[in-house]
Image (tube, rainbow, N blue to C red; front, side, top):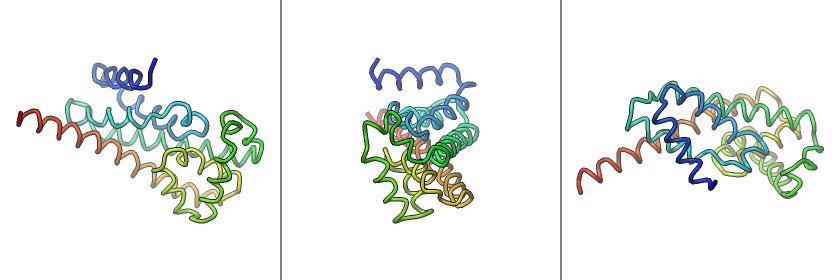
Length: 178
């Protein structure tokens, strides 16, 4: 099944079963932020699609936003823990073993930007999962990491969900004009 079909299926399921919106969004954000998993299954497009449902259906923004934020923060927390616990052994694990440049690149990014790099890294594809892992491997202070982790998770999830909501409103306006 193609990624587009999976995204469409998830968004359609949430549209039909709105009570599942928050748990599904939380799981998607967790997977999107978890090292290894996010490299295989990018969920950001499903989060934008579900954000579009917020404006076009009875899906409530606040529970979905909180679930997405907590899911993203927990995914990064677990990635940090994996890096902290397993250190350089993670470079030998799949899929990082197939992308040997990813962890050194994330390390340079964390070294250069420090705590703000955790916040910034959340917004950039492969860095999203590699930066928390690198922060753990290179033992960034736990509470410094968590401050950036949780604050960026709330901003990131709001950005994706509100972008989807804005797209749905723009599409509705466009079709009303046509």
